[in-house]
Image 1 (spheres, rainbow, N blue to C red):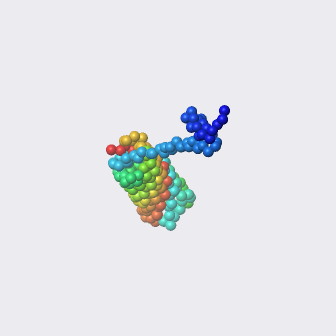
Image 2 (spheres, rainbow, N blue to C red):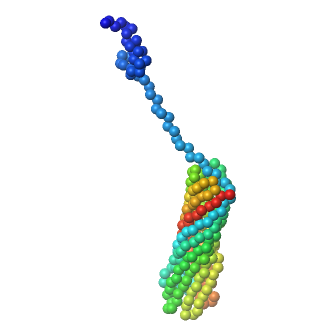
Image 3 (cartoon, one colour):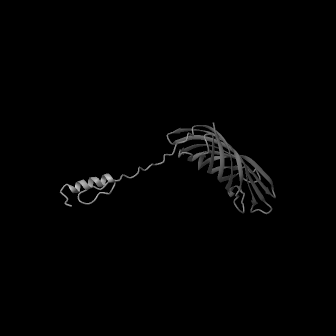
Length: 232
C-alpha cells in the first residue's frame, strides 16, 4: 500500500479521534491542566457583647519582707495555694481584632509560715482574696482567640508575727498591677472555655504597732487559671 503526503495528517486526526496519544512527526502533545487547589477558609466568630463566667486556678507568691523594719526572717515567705472566683466583661470586635475590658474577684488560699531570726519567733502570711480590672486585646482565629491582658490588681492580705515581745497582727488591702496572656475557645455561640497566666505585683506596708518598725512587703504572684464563660 502506498501512503501519499496526506497520509500522516489523516492518521493523526484519526488517532486523536480514537483517543490515542499523539505520535511524533510534528503532532502536538495534549496539555493537561492541574486540578485547582482549594484553600480552606476559617469562618470568623463573633466575640462582641457582654459575658460572665467562673474560674479555678493555682497561684504561687514570692513575698519579700524588708528587714530594715526590724523583722529578720530566716527565709522569705512563699505563700501558695488554690483560688476560685467569678468574672465578667465586655468585648467589641473590629475585623479579626477583639478588644475588651474584664473584671474578676477570687477567693484564695495562699498561705505560708516560717521563723524569724529571733528566738521563739514565727510568722504567718495569708492572702485571702484577689481582684483585678484589666483590658484585653485578642485576635479572632475562628473558634480560637489568643489574647494579652493588663491592668490593676488588689489583694486582701493578713500578717501575723509572734515574738517574745508579743503577737503582732496586721491586715489590709494591697494594690498593684497585673499582666498576662491566654486563649479562649468558642464551644458554641454562647459558651467558651479559657486558660490564662497572670503575673501580679502588689506591695504595701506591715504596721508593727510599736513592737517593731513598720516594714515594706512586696508580693510577686504567678497564677494559672482555667475558666468557663457564657456570652449574652
